[in-house]
Image (tube, rainbow, N blue to C red; front, side):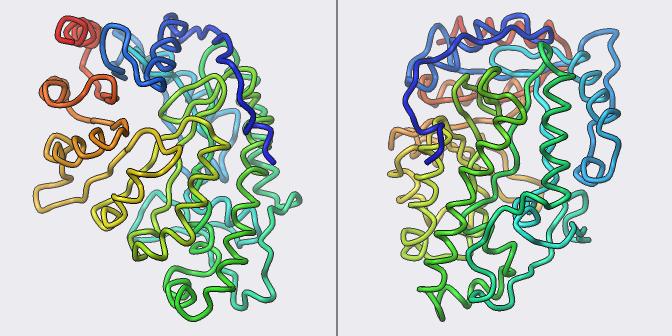
Length: 369
């Protein structure tokens, strides 16, 4: 059982040089998770600082093969050049890519794809489940060792300045899809469900091991957990992109119990709800235990990616079910969405051209809440 399952009081939040109002932001995050507001909804807004020039953020490939110290130094330079307004938190994630946990469990090195430039994918390695189960994290895997070293080094160099985010937690069924291949896994769900029962049990056992190891390496129990959301005692993004290829019955059998189990470990969750193909599971997701904030990712249409302001009916449905929602947009768009959504169940995310504009937006939210 993960040590993060236990109930605990909110701890004091350490100050950050790049976030002078961190204590106030932490109070607002705590209120948000309690379904309350102080004087406005949760707002994360960033802006470039005048006269400051940021460094380059590293790609997934750079994090796998590049110089850790250079990557960390560039992240610090970028964070120092950014104004983090409202509940925005300066943070850096060493993640290697969506399939990193599959690699840590025995996959080959990462590969790229012309269909998804800038993302690392693992090579499926399970040809026969009977010879590959149970899936286990390989402590001697060189990339796993590098990841732990990356977190430890970043924790040292970023102490008192910015926070670390968790890995891309593509676990449960996403982990099975990565080690088996999505097409073959689709057939397995129908042809050998009992085997998938065992495969999922082993995948679920990997999650708390990874969670605790990363939290320890990044010293997150001392400094807090940040992954788009923040809490001093546990917060992360949970996801399963494979559910767009599953029907509701199979989702309820395998994925929903795993997600609720992960949510109990993580404590405060952001659900990365990826695309319209996953909306078939809305009823189950909105009645789930532990999934707090719905972070819907709209599809890309002829005119570009659909905006959150065009998804207001879905966001309102989520709130009606008692779930909080992430609402992303321009400053004008988040102002407009604020007039439609419940403030205690909304997390507004935007950026502005200047710090003065960001501060003005926060004052607008106070005045109009």
